[in-house]
Length: 299
Image (tube, rainbow, N blue to C red):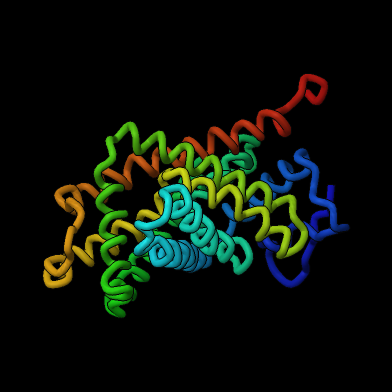
């Protein structure tokens, strides 16, 4: 396992915990130990630092969503799978910025459960981190949506970008509760696997390559990411409020479910629940059990 770096000039942060000793990726058992240590560091960061980094993460994911929406706009002439693949590949910008530039993302922080399971993080710290990061992500995503709306970027492509944004938001608020939970579980299993892979990487290139396939896969498959939806549905609600734009569309999507209740209760609540199950249980808890649980011989 790589050595833990000790610092005399301040507290350790997730980015300074491990120093690379070669080009080979860490073995899975070492990744598990690194994930646990990073979880301890994340849970121990000052609240103001966590919140600011969470706002950045919400904005970063929103930037990936903007990229994906713009690329998917006007893609009716392409096969469904091709449009979804292009949207997925462009959306990876969001997590790449989170991982490489540094930010706190709620869905990725579900892996802190590994440190909690090892009793190195208290339940209060775990819940506090998740709550603060979720709120910060929401602030960052909403602020980005407001900025995009003011810029009227949704009018680009002859209104195709805005029409696509409306269609995406309407589809997300039209999901059943159980369906949204299941789609959220599948999504964050892939997101946390992407983060898990970056923990084993040593270079920026490694991290970027590790992020792309899982994130492109969840977007292409139509899985649900709570933080991305904070942007997707927010911008949909804002564009819907532009009556002149909506009236000018030749065939606007059904917007009957696109309202605040559909956003918060119909989508964000079940998707967040599903994300926690997918990330904390299906990935974090499983890998803790495989690699970090106490063995009889250790007791």
